[in-house]
Amino acid sequence: MSYELVWFKRDLRWEDHAALAQASRKGPVRCIYVIEPDLWLQPDSALQHFEFVRESLQALDRHLRAQGGCIEIFTGELPDVLQQIWQDAPFANLYSHEETGNAFTYARDLKVASWCQSQAVTWHEFPQFGVVRGLKDRNLWQSAWERHMSAPICTAVKLRFWQAPPHAAMVMQAPPHLKHNPPRRQRGGRPLAKATLDSFINARSIGYRGGISSPLSAPDACSRLSAYLSWGCISMREVVQHTRAQLASLPPQASRHKAGLTAFLSRLYWHCHFIQKLESEPRIEWNNMHRGYDMLRENEFNQAHFEALKAAQTGWPMVDACVVMLRETGWLNFRMRAMLVSVAAYPLWLHWRPVGEWLATQFLDYEPGIHWSQLQMQSGTTGINTTRVYNPIKQAQDHDPQGKFVRRWLPAMRSVPDTWLFEPWMMPQRELTDATQMPQIVPPLVELAAATKTAKHRVHERRRDPEVKAGKKAVIDKHASRQGFRSSKKTAIEQSSHAKQMGFDF
Image (cartoon, rainbow, N blue to C red; front, top):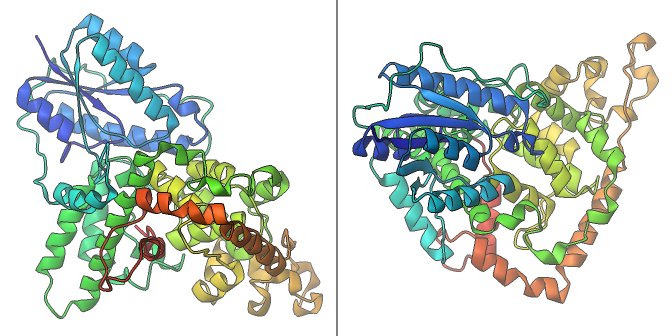
């Protein structure tokens, strides 16, 4: 019996799954997920990603089994797996969502397209987010985003399956080389994604505005949907439509709740805006968005500084506490992420690519399009954004004034008096009542003010170069936001800077 093959990737859900819905309208479906060994060898992969996928696939499998089907797990490179499936039981159509992933998935999809052509298989691909494949004019993007978000939710008709599922439940073994699975990370699966969305739009979003900057309040004030969106446990369209419906239902006096949901919606827009950058120009995963910034940092990479950053040994307590929280939970709010990249890029003068590879493994919600665009934006290599440098001492004073966050994640800091908590290397020995309490203070890797000043000077010097200035227009035309503001005098550069300030505090 003929069937429609549905390939699940970073779209691990059953509701608003366009590929599954369209396949189910044509005939019996066969659902597969492929563990690709070479994909999990990429430097942006971590064990936490694999385990989150496994948990999400288990939830998907339970849902499909309740309707008489299952998700079949294969291991191998995609063309080889598809060839094996096709030889055992030929199919004429392959269904999947588009993916704006890393360089490996880009090349993999080209191979899949070539295989489909060779076997006369029609590959039906559907947008995953509000991202437009083959976009020719950035001016057309915003209206396309709105059309996608306003379209009806895709619901599969009563599913018919190619064959009954095996009695044994699905089994997935993690590749043995994968490392890093934070003990306190979020767990995967659509039911948890839905519960997280409901708790946010119904209650937690009241604290969204004003609560998303501090790492103390952000874990509750932020939506915490980023991992579920990145791995497709819930669709962006579902989140947008549920949020808009809740916003419309609130009474006039719920002004704080409305403000939180409105701010959240704007960040959902910027989420797709940044992924579009990588979709339109895949090379920015590897190269500076503005090539005029080539060789700015590349030949001066200080490996010792990088190792200290990864080990939470920079000497700046707020930075080190953020690294430890990220290591333990797989999540950090946007402002603190931006601070980490800023410290790496300016006082430590580290190139964004190695830093980005490390952070990709640390972020459970790693989304390549947002990730690499933000790494470059915070490092000052886009050529169109104002330089924004985060001072880790001031960030601590502003967002952790009582030192609760620093002391939570850095036990050694618990005996340091408030006066010296954010600059412990300045603390006199006599400040401790008992010398045995003296923590082992790590002095800063560099003198913050001097190193930052030098770094900013070097970036601004490059920015003033006539050829670099001349190259900005091409970047603006290709990547800058076109979202309208009240003042018609706003330039594309100002709009892009506004996008940066909006952040991605999910």
